[in-house]
Image (cartoon, rainbow, N blue to C red; front, side, top):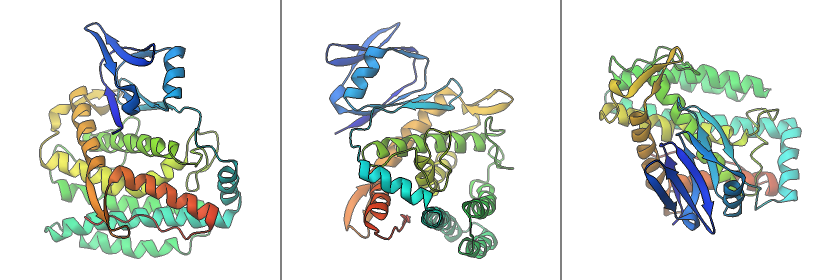
Amino acid sequence: MNKDIYIFSNGELRRKDNTLYFETSEGKKYLPVEEINNIWIFGDVDVNKRFLEFAAQKEIVLHFFNHYGYYVGSFYPREHLNSGYVLLKQAEYYTDYEKRLNIAKKIIDGAFSNMLIVLRYYKSRGIEIEDRINAIVEKREDLASSNTVEEVMAVEGNIREIYYSCFDNIINKPGFVFEKRSKRPPLNRLNALISFGNSLLYSVVLSEIYHTQLNPSIGYLHSTNNRKFTLNLDVAEIFKPAIVDRLIFSLINRTYITEEDFDEQLNGIILDEKGRKIFVQEFNNKLDVTINHPKLNQIVSYRKIIRMELYKIQKHITQDEEYTPFVARW
């Protein structure tokens, strides 16, 4: 069974013969290289060319986060499942504006569906948010009449603002007030959790893209430009409510994470190391949660569902198979 390794300590990642090890002031720890899919690096860790060559050979993706928990970038080994045909079809569906717009609408409509699933669950638990659920349903109709990707993004922004306004009702803790969305730096604890969780999800989707024939540089909702990767940002939109937001509600309401797990840095607020470790552990557990997939009639994990979502997009662009985004069942 392949797994992810998370490194919070400072040290060096090195290769020794046909294995890898992580060395700190306390000694060396050898890593089960044949079992690793991804290495997530949160500490100050040095790597060298010899290590990266071996990681690429073993198809290990590395994700780097800085001292403040901000995503820095990924080491994405040379694609081992490259397909010129899939790349050409992916580019065709980007350059043909109608095809691109159709995929962008599908992605955002999937995100809206999952937002409503989350909100309706909490409404059923007695949270007073019905007015905003109705507002989202009403504004969702603007998506069909959107003629540009920019208009789709504007509809998404309007609906997400309404959606985020429900967080204070769901959490109802003075130390975790939403106020408004803020990034780099987040201006309060709740925004710090959202930013950190979204960054983790972007990285997970990127890792899953590596195991398909898709190219992560060609997205449809987010413009393909100087940004290295965009497809992972697209697909993550579908899963943010079901994975990141639900996890945040659980962590706060069960007091796994408290007001004490944050630092004031860079004129903003970030999770401290203890908070990041808790979040990462529970995030990883969330990805491994299994659900009964209604169409496949089998038990699958959220991690597997993300990869299946990518396969659906691949089939859409290569076989004209209608793409229907994943919608969670609580």
